[in-house]
Length: 357
Ligand SMILES: Nc1ncnc2c1ncn2[C@@H]1O[C@H](COP(=O)(O)OP(=O)(O)OP(=O)(O)O)[C@@H](O)[C@H]1O
Image (cartoon, rainbow, N blue to C red; front, side, top):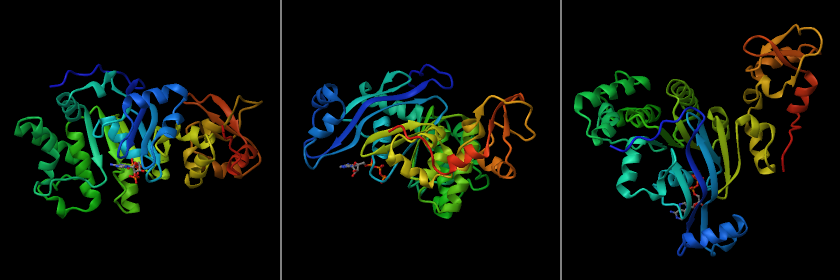
């Protein structure tokens, strides 16, 4: 058994990386070279020194992933999301930088320790499902527990519980080939949850599914996370999926992280034009909530129409468009926190968002 990590509360840092690099090529620079270039005059100096034909798949990534949050790595194909995810689990060896899990230096862990950490603390789900074709649903789900040496009765009981959790009760005896893509991915999800991982890595888990099933799986995923409150690193190239699922998003380009923020922070203040461009496909009315865009304070008497600060703009819009008056925004105890006016929202919908660069 691995020594258990110190249990931290929600919001504390679970997994972190600092100035993480992965450089591919015939003769990538040594860690010491990256270290000196990186500390000299910023990350760009490393990129500038990479020999032609080499690529920095991850270029100086620094981030903190908090306990119980869904942290999404988002970016176009080739931006480095999968490489970063694999560097965080050391399935790929980073060229330089640090990775810590509950404060433990993962790059200092020997092979055996790293295998133990992966088996016992990390769960992984990939796009291609990765199920074992000769095993039934139940045996696939129970497989990680078998690897851990857990006895048959116990692992089957746990596997049944997980199979039911993902909505596949009754299909325990079927084989992967008898299931649809969405069902196969449910098996992959159940299997990765069976070992009760502390941190869950999902790399484009729904990308192979058609759009309707994909949406259902996203809903399922949101439902599961409400119950499980796992720390999750989720890779997607789909901006809508990112904004739908994330507590926070890191947007990557050419191996580097361009911006990290909550969906609303990014939607309201994209760091640059590249990110603002992504937002064209984001349904802002569903992402932005009343509390994010209200004018705080209350002028005069209590407004006749009042919405919760958690209401989305989509929910408020019909009332807002129905008349010229402001709408009151209330907190959980029904006190008025602020107001939203049609003119303020019109400006927002016209795209008059601040960019910080
Ligand atoms: N083994 C490798 N050897 C050389 N270059 C690699 C290797 N793996 C990845 N790369 C390069 O690193 C960059 C980042 O790749 P990565 O797969 O991490 O991107 P991604 O954002 O996950 O893309 P996708 O969404 O298409 O999976 C790309 O330019 C890719 O060609």
